[in-house]
Length: 256
Image (cartoon, rainbow, N blue to C red; front, side, top):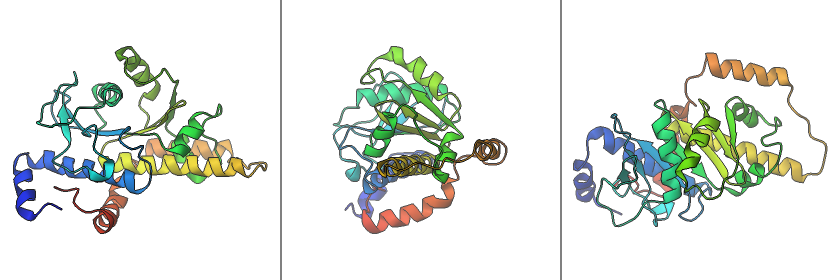
């Protein structure tokens, strides 16, 4: 673990705003690992930096999520050029997906993408997310679908990704995994927690080989109305301090 002097040196290299964003993003990577949603080194979370340049932070490609620290995150521009000194490259598929969303959604600070087994399983089911749990209702209130086009390396896919996400908070990448966006890192993480929970509940319910009880459309419509008129963001700020305390107990050192 880095000592306090090393943390202070790392901190001083960035503005206070960028450092806080780096700490939150590094925490999100470690929480994804803690909850078992990581896929070795092959998924990605990004956070946009303030300013018109659309620069954003992303993981150093090759570090395990449980190892990532605030200072190790890589700053890149919209062309994928590294703007910070790092011995690690950037995942090209991560760049394609995240640069597309960050350039199109000014309201989004964080984009989170996972290949969790539950998420991939539901993404391969033709009906997608079913209205069979409370968690599924929050997802269905703001959910888009994007058909699989192979590994996301082609810039020509970007407009279709942006179109299918629209102004929503959740995107199911068919045969691929889950994506959430949020106005903060905390919001994107809470969105993924809910998305993953909905998929886990669906996989288990379908495995029971019994007739399912679906939630009435009128209730779903009510959730949509509430989400549109009342809620702002996913409310991640409520859960985030507790998640950081959990992380401090189980895998400290992200804020270095």
